[in-house]
Length: 190
Image (cartoon, rainbow, N blue to C red; front, side, top):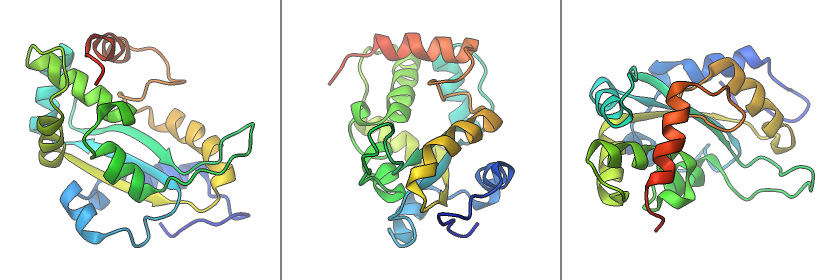
């Protein structure tokens, strides 16, 4: 999907389809090797887990997780109601927050860290191990979207359609989401 600009709002189904195109998913290594070109702007993204990673997440949660999309989000949306512009971009969100070394900076990383800590019988997040696990088992799709003012509203509609099991805020409570909430509270803060 090409970059979407202000005044050219896409059909929600088009965004959902782009985020579901598994064939477009890149490993963290591939994403980082491609560099920030085309990713240094706002947008949406989806994270995908492979079969072995899903098996480990299932063990940590005590509930079955299928391989495929597990999380989706945005980077760089204008903060409402203040209208404050975000300096975040897809590149920064994925490389420094999700793939960084601090689970406190990323809801997604915190969730994965808590689940994997549970699988290992730990109460702390092994940041190095978590990063290695993410590089080994995850893939990401990005959809650049330059209209930061509309991005937050679009995310809500897109998440409603995608319903990724690891998204918590504003989503229907499921057994997986309830268990994630419990596990996230059980890990120690940095």
